[in-house]
Image (cartoon, helix red, strand yellow):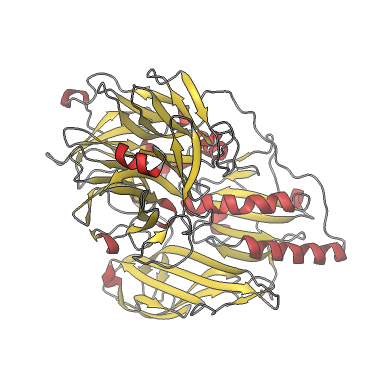
Length: 613
């Protein structure tokens, strides 16, 4: 890796520290250690993937490595310190976290994407920066090099890290995710932070049984021994399908990148789709052996179009799974993270996290969380009902084309054709009525609602995730008289734009293979670059897909500003070893740009390495 210029790491400053026992950390406290700064935000699925990638490194190098999460919020709700503290517990973050709501550290370390990792050596210098996912192997090699170098210099200090776990309160549920009503009136809930499923009595409080041992894992077997990793969505199969498949319920086992089947009579758990590896491949329209195909953070599941549809949050797509044929494949989306409607193969989504099917089975409703949108599928086409895009959000009711949500995770189709929305970061339940085109607020003051279910008796239960409970909506809340009209602020994520000149602009994605690795073209070109723009008119030339990480763009001077959407990936393998392992690094950037006289003619983005220009 190129490291010709040594850059002193900027001092760490923010609003507060978490997981340190109340202690404020400085770089001086970390001298002698290898440090990874993880710039993350808790809404971001890619950031959650990196948390999981870092866990083995934290365990392996515990006496020399300190990981520090620098929380750099996207949504307004993520600036709430209580919400951050809840997220740190929810996602099992076992390292110090610096709360940086104004994103000062993001600017100081020149981060341009969630997630970004900066590596600081034991002498306090930044030695590497990398964006996106898939860096675990490269980080391990880099840490090995730093250990060898600084042990020889006498500048490496081993010992206990600064992490101090917070006390954990006892509740029946811990950050429940999704729920389904069962025959007989009971409810089944994914108890995500306890890595299990819980069956509750009709009161929504009394625990009947638990399916899963309660620890993080991916073991199949009986209810008391099976393990999950932050399970989310639940889907009951039609009886005739369940009889053939041999299980009644499909579970989106999110962090394991698996679908699991559950026999409700016994609680036995079996893996039905996925390998446990995260999907890092190419888009296709093939049917795959369900147990041989990789998945990526399945977040919800629903029975539609005679199969299980999967909200594949990790790659911004919908997939399908056939429990009888035991096959799976892509249903909608290109993996581009944005908002675009149209025929299912061509649409853009952003972390779809909730699914619900209309009473007549004709529409599939989708909570597309990162675009703060509610969308629907019918006859092979996707439409947007509510939502403006990645950077526009808020709590605004009224006509659907003007209404705003904030990171909704759940949606529930009602018998009258309207839909309820778990408007998670607004702490509200909203209702959209297609007949009138209006959005209203049904309930607010909730703690991160993540799902809604309608019982056989017609009651609506809200999965109030951050309050660790199910909550009943008041009778009459669904009537027109029970709805409120909220005119809250219209919020927009205003990241500092990059000033670029009209005309030619060189886009350069910087990628240096990790120590001991080389670019790998065994299965085709080792690199891939996809570029698009919003609005599309921003680019006169340069949009599309190539295999070179450098691209000549031509920017239209008549378009004042916009967003360049860039996806880059690089395939590497271990160098000069037998049975070399292969690796794929990938990142998506949404780069806001402003076209000005005297603006930049070069736009560097770091996938892995350092920008030496």
